[in-house]
Image 1 (tube, rainbow, N blue to C red):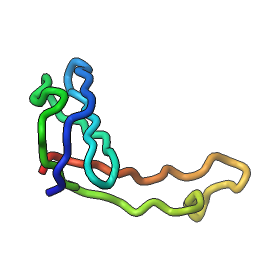
Image 2: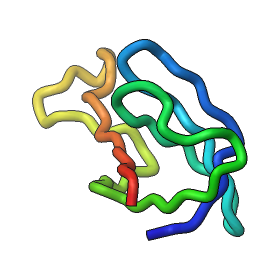
Image 3: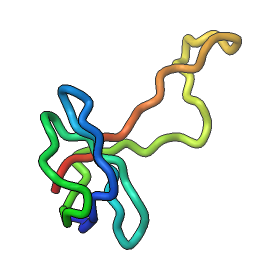
Image 4: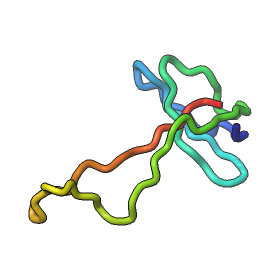
Length: 80
């Protein structure tokens, strides 16, 4: 797990967004439910799953070059 401090939080109804800061920068984290951590709290977090994103748009073999690019993968982080 990585160590961080809660620099910001926002309750969004069914989930809470957090901004965590650490020695290497900051990361955005989303947890289900109401706030669990206050601004200034020390927390740990880890990566639950991740995908490497390509440098160029990815097209399916049957995509029309004039059309929209194929869907891109995304990344998810989770508490550590």
